[in-house]
Amino acid sequence: MTHKPGYYSQFGGAFIPEILAATFEELCAAFEGAKADPTFWAEYERLMRSYSCRPTPITFAENLTRHFGGPRIYVKREDLNHTGAHKANNVMGQGLLVRRMGKRRVIAETGAGQHGVATATMAAKFGFECTIYMGEVDVERQRPNVFWMERLGAKVVPVTEGSRTLKDAINEAFRDWVSNMDTTHYVLGTACGPHPFPEMVAWFQSIIGSEARRQILEEAGQLPKRVYACVGGGSNAMGIFSGFFDEPGVELVGVEAGGLGLKTGQHAARLSGGDASVGVAQGYRTYFLQDEDGQMRETHSVAAGLDYVGVSPILSHYKDNGRVRFESATDAEVVEALALTVKKEGLIPALESSHAFAQAFKEAPSLGSDQVLLINQSGRGDKDIFTVADAFDDPAWKDFIKRKAAHYEAP
Ligand SMILES: *Cc1c(COP(=O)(O)O)cnc(C)c1O
Image (cartoon, rainbow, N blue to C red):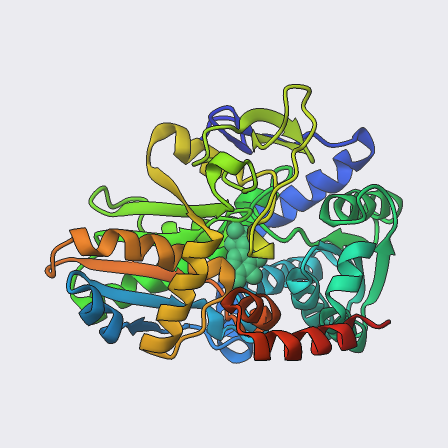
C-alpha cells in the first residue's frame, strides 16, 4: 500500500523528538521480527483463545432482520472480549511484544479509562510494572475505572496540566517515555500516533477481520454487502475492515460521532464532517479537527471513546481513495439504535459501537433480503449506564443515577 514505511499516501509518518529515535527503531525492529515469525502470531492466537474468548462469535440478529424486513443482519461480538471490548486485542498483542523486547514496564494514557483498565489488566497478567496517565478531570469522572486500575497494580497519575483531559495525559506519557526508554514501552491505545503504532495496532486488530470473514462465509454462505464499524481512533474499524479490503464487492462503512449534529460544530466527525483539515500533531499526519491557526478544536460525543480530534492515518488514506465510506450518527440516533438493539436482540452494545448500528439501521430498509450486513459490536455497554439512563430521561432512574454517580465521584 505504501512506498515509504509508515506512510499511507500523504498520511502517517513518525514526527518524534530526536531523543526517541533509537527507541522507535528498536520498536520497529521488534515489530518486523514478530511479523516475520509465525510462532509469534500463533502464540498471540493461543493467548487470546485462553484469556479473551477468541474467536469471538458472530451473532445472527434475527429479530432486527425481521424488524427492518430487508438484509440479514449479523453482529461480530467484540464485546465478549475480556475487559469488554476489542481493546484487549491490542494490549495483549503489545504485551507479547514487550516481553519479546525484554522490557518490564508499560505506560499508557487513558481518557474514559477503558484503555487504562485493559493495559493494567495486561500488565498484571504479564507481571509488568504499570503507570497510567489520566487527566485530573477524567480521574474524577471515572472513579470505578481508577479503582480497578489500582487494584490491578497500576499507578494512576492524575495530570494537572492544560485542560486536564486526554491530550494532556498523552503529553505526560510521552514525557515519561523519554526519561525511561530503556525499561519502558508506551502502549498506545488505537491505530494513531507515530509509525509503527498505526500499522502495529491495526495488525493486532486484524484478528477481528480474519475471523469475521471466515465466520460470515460459514454462517451466511456469502460475503457481506456492507460492513459497519464505529471510528474513534480507528482501531476496531481497521480490524474488521482488514478481512474485506481485498473484496471489491464489500462496501466498508466507518461511522463517526455526529454529536449534537454536524452543523453545531459539536461533533467528532473528522472524515465525514467536511470541516477537518490535514495537519501534523501528536507525532503523525492526518485529518484533524483544528482551527485556521492549527489549534485543536473541542470535540463532542455521547461516546467517550469516539471523542478525539485525530484519526488513524490509514483511514485518512482510505477516505481519500474512496475505499471506505465515512458517515456520522448523532447522539440522539445512537441512543435510539441502542434502545432498539437491547429490546430486540438482548445485546447491549457500547455507545461507541451503537454508532455502527445506527448507520446500518438507516441503510437496511433500502437493501434486499438476499443481502447480508455485518456490524462490529466493538464493546459492551454496561459501562454506559449513567449516560444512557440520563439520555432516556426517566425521572426515577435519573435520581437514582445521580445519587450513585455522586457516590462514585466522592474521592
Ligand atoms: C475505545 C473504544 C472505541 C474507539 O476506538 P477505536 O480505536 O476507534 O476502535 C470503540 N468502541 C469501544 C467499545 C471502545 O472501547
